[in-house]
Image (tube, rainbow, N blue to C red; front, side, top):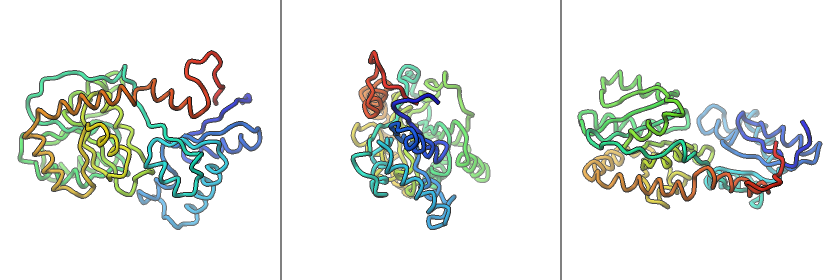
Length: 307
């Protein structure tokens, strides 16, 4: 590689930032770690790694040394920043640059709001997502034609939901394959409410990025997950959705029945979602925040070379 001013390494694949740390040490280049998922925490939180195993302790040690030596650590949420602070990473090195979506390719599309209330989960559903709370509501509302649960995408979580619905003989759930990026705005706009879930254990080690696509599409968010997380903070700040704690299936059912009874309030929450997106989470604002952290100016005549 030619010499650069700034090296930015991400956390996918896990531990990639070790390469950045080596370049920083050997060539004196500034190094920023852009954290999308915390490793090995994310593996520990979902039970893949044991917290006290030799491998896990070794990975923590390698990661902590890289974080400590980096010129900056970019996190995608305050909840993630808090977890790194708890690891002893110096506060002055930690920066928050939340994720974003492209508001030109994902935008609200009006549709006729008749028929059942459509609650859509779009994207991958993996090990870090809460499923049981959602299953409680699906079964509780199985005989109520006013609700439809729709899952677009795949993942081990969705496979489990599909098999569970087949065993129970439920017909209030629809499964669809991934749509193309070009059709994402159309797909998301078919929902009345977008679903986002996260296991309590994964607070801060993972920050659900599908929040920003839903905001871009002007759809309110129903978040099943812990309150002390970034999606919950966005919902509270902009009044663009609702939050339910993991395990509170009865509370989720009551919320859905209340929303169905007052369906006219749902589109206004979607309008607030799109407004919040345009002011805070569209690509230009997020890119500007990222460049600011890296010491570059977006659109400047002379930009800082970044690898």
